[in-house]
Amino acid sequence: MNGLKRFVTSSIGRKVVMATTGLFLISFLVVHCAVNALIFFDDGGQTFNIGAHFMGTNPVIRTIEVVLIIGFLIHIIQGLMIWWQNKKARPISYAVKKESKNSTWYSRSMALLGTLLLLFLIVHTSNFWIPNRTHQFLHGDELPLYEMMIEKFQNPFQVLLYVFSCFLLFWHLLHGFKSAFQSMGINHRKYNALILFLGVTFSYVIPFIMAMMPVAIYLNWIGE
Image 1 (cartoon, rainbow, N blue to C red):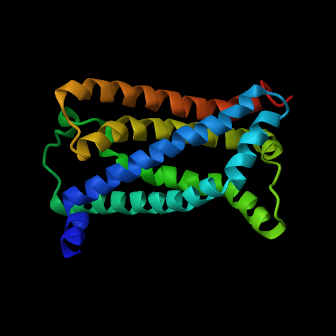
Image 2: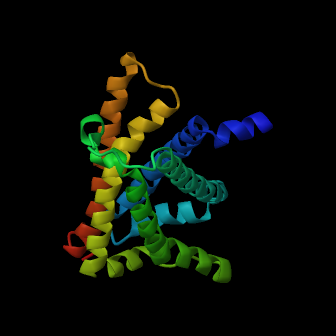
């Protein structure tokens, strides 16, 4: 038990935990994006409501939600601990910084990107998930999420906020996807090209689809 504790709190252990929770959250993004993309059927919310109802009432999904929340918390805490360890390891800035030659700006800004995404997540859950789950707990039924989305994204500020957050997510995934596999020891010339391709593709596709939802509603492409 003590050995496991030492490993989890070590630099390598924190990165492994960070990578594991990160890949779990990536799988959540796929499901979340797929269900929300049902809004593009533009059938008055019928198909979207079927997907949302399944996600909101299925006992397996509801159980996974608890695991998801725990995964988010662990990922955030470990990310902050890694950032703090790195900061303590190099308390004095170099006279001449050469970071740009060895790494990308977004790989060096993962803590900032993660913090901004956390703030967005608080806003996002306050807009939809928390009110819906609270209403389910108090009244036993769900809120009209489709109508809530149509109303929410008539506000240009909300649309810009969501699009900007998807832009942040793109940069976060662009480094995080590949980095997660490397932290777990999956780093071989036979697989690296494929992992890089999948990571870049995923980083473009998922944020783009999610950003297009509020944009399409605001421009009345759907929900008219």
